[in-house]
Length: 347
Image 1 (cartoon, rainbow, N blue to C red):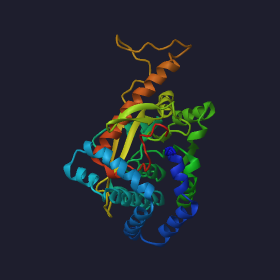
Image 2 (spheres, rainbow, N blue to C red; image 1 turned 30 degrees about the horizontal axis):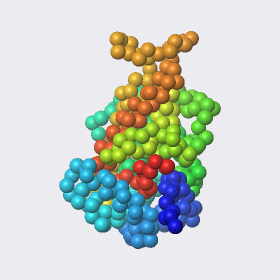
Image 3 (tube, one colour; image 1 turned 90 degrees about the vertical axis):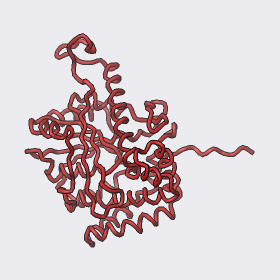
Image 4 (cartoon, rainbow, N blue to C red; image 1 turned 180 degrees about the horizontal axis):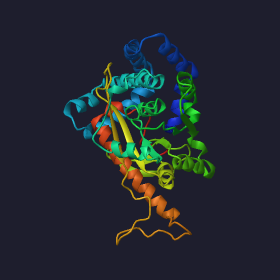
């Protein structure tokens, strides 16, 4: 009798099993009842409990940490990745991350503890100040909710209020989205389901960017049914699937594109501070001039790129993003919160 091979589940299936509304509602109740420091302390036994009773989380965390270990830049962090207690550290770090998401949306996170770097942040603020819209590609490393919280509470350093639209998988995030609305009913963030992106929504996003808003989407998740359509990009020593649609959409928007990462200083810190890293994409999205320029397709006015050229630009964007994501994972492996087999070709 042949042994039945287990088919890897798509990441959305893992989420559906773990994100019941009662769970997020409990978090919201605790958030309202206790000081934040108490919640941070509670995050440790909660993470330990999850480590003990979730075999899937232990397995997938261990799989990722063992894969990342040979590429980790610091010897002490590499040892922690190879340790049998590495998954425990990883899961507790994730538990703390959830508390910090609540803090950012509830207005309790000390935004003075977010440290911008000497990178492209000034250019980002300048473009927003000038009324331009920007397209932000984020990830599941660190806590990008801090950026959305900053925008929601108008603390981005920009001189005007900047609405933000988040493209997420609402099918698996709807419970968390309901909780965020309860935390911050005045949030200026709009949510669009990633599964509903089509010509109409793309046009709506382009209009939002035209009037100076921000649009954000995570670049390290694939769509359901994307097998065979994903682009395979080297990531930590092995080709991994990334969704071409995310980057093609970004290329279509004709707006400045930034890759943004918010990394905690200390995986298990109960007094967290974050480094916010902002990288502007240098992939050309407008017709270029000169001997090495890509020749765009001639339209009425102005010149526009063909679909084939936009797909090529999307591929360049994807490779740029993955290189940055890999660099941050090498430095902070315990802060990448994708608890499923990221390299599974079926996912």
